[in-house]
Image 1 (cartoon, one colour):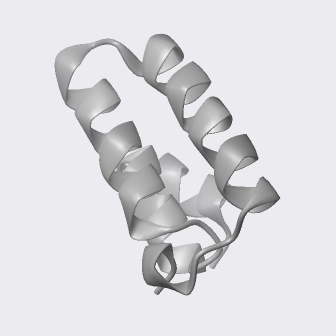
Image 2 (cartoon, one colour):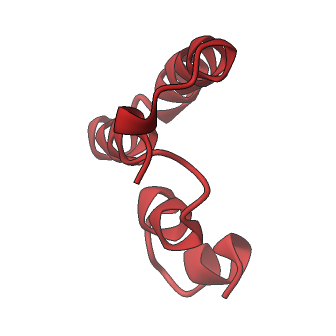
Length: 64
């Protein structure tokens, strides 16, 4: 199932991203917090910065 379909069915963006198994759990958790607090745009910026730093120095501990 695609993330778009999952969100259209009423699931959260974080849940949809977890199902893809593409993003690390921490990124999905950060997005979940942004959704719950109403600060999703700011949290997406934080996740973007986090992922950029992580992909420069990958660590297997951060991935599923």
